[in-house]
Image (cartoon, rainbow, N blue to C red):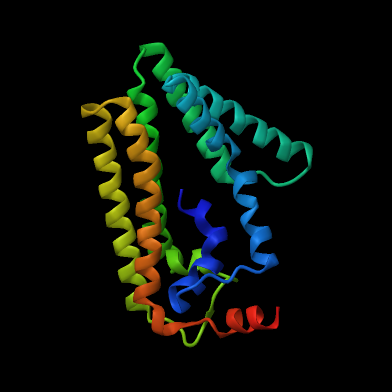
Length: 221
């Protein structure tokens, strides 16, 4: 789920450093990919808000996800592993929700996704020496100097702990509150959590980041 916010990193980074957002045409064109990448999610949101039927909304999401994969294959483009994973996970949970007549299975998807994200962050650090902040801002942000590994490990730990806690809270809310309450918690809470993690990451590494190039570009335009 983290990666859907990656296109907004260049604009967001300038906002953190300068107090305003500089979005030139190149960055705006990247941001347009958000809708292209996430229209199954948009369909899920619209379907639930209109029908208040979580199973139906999940079916709309699965259909959109399948169309997304098939379109990619028709265009002879590589299918993202994350798209395949989300599709098969969503389809399996949808089938269980329908068979057992219990939409709590669908609510589990958020927890599984954020816990999987936490595991990926942890495994990439241990086995590949990769760090979540560097993954998210690659080719988007320049650095004055290389951030210390200790800082990057701290940021990774914060992400892992936060995502793990969010997944646990999601389960608690799914089983103890109404579906409406869970829906808004999932959509608003996850967005706020991820953006909070990004803000915290930028603050911790602010002195290592270089925004002069973005400012120069805005002045030239």
